[in-house]
Length: 159
Length: 176
Image 1 (cartoon, rainbow over the protein chains, first blue to last red):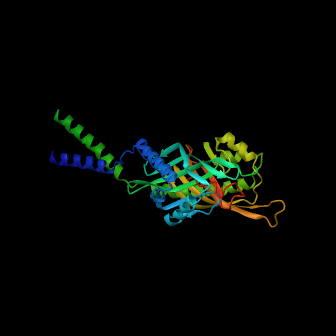
Image 2: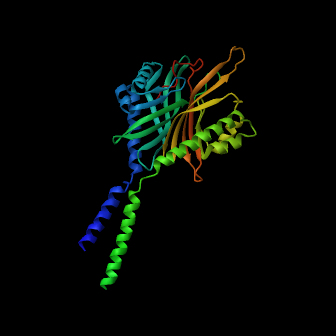
Image 3: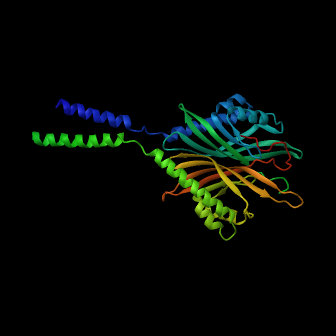
């Protein structure tokens, strides 16, 4: 009987150890929504360090009409350059998140949305609208942005 | 009574042992990923041929081959395009792209999703400009495995590397 009991518990432990923990995708999506909101505030305040803390070390930024930025050092230069642009009224930026989806494995997520912000132009202040996609990966228990790409809805001048 | 109890215990143990052994089997994720990567690479080669021959008549075939039913495109300087029907209309009005090229730069498979980064290039001829120039940029796709096992683009966004033509500000696209 002792052998049977031992075998029984061995099986139970083996099953328990190998079972994949269930992912609370709703909670994970909410965590990413929180990060996106922090990102917007960081842009409004031109907080470079905060923006940089959201990227993974191997993060990739694909900004329109620019070469690709790979890695933190390269991305920081891009953010610094953006924040130096005085035509952009950073404090007017707002973000609408359209959707956040977390994979069943709980280690990758996709978010997309629209950023709006005002810009100074020769003809006055105009609103720019950018659509964006961010990919997040869970690294050491924290969500980090591994890919960020966006482009504008606004037509090219003259179109 | 005792015999029935022993049968019950043995039966239960057999089920538990089976469950434990099944759970301990090595996962086949690695193999599946390599198979998926190969399938996506082949899909990309086929898509490229279709893009180069794209016209009003075969746009629908191209879209059905390439995009999922609920796909969304995010073209630069335009609003998002949602769903196959709208995407077909979009490509029916696309200029000829016989010299278009795209190469996979990065591919990561995550279960039923894959993200794909491609470099694209296309010679552009403009009236009054000699020689014409080569436009280059990045395509970023999220692909989703369909019920039939095929991979299709679910979300796609792209940009040009080249500086935008004269715009009212120094940088209109810096809000992210």
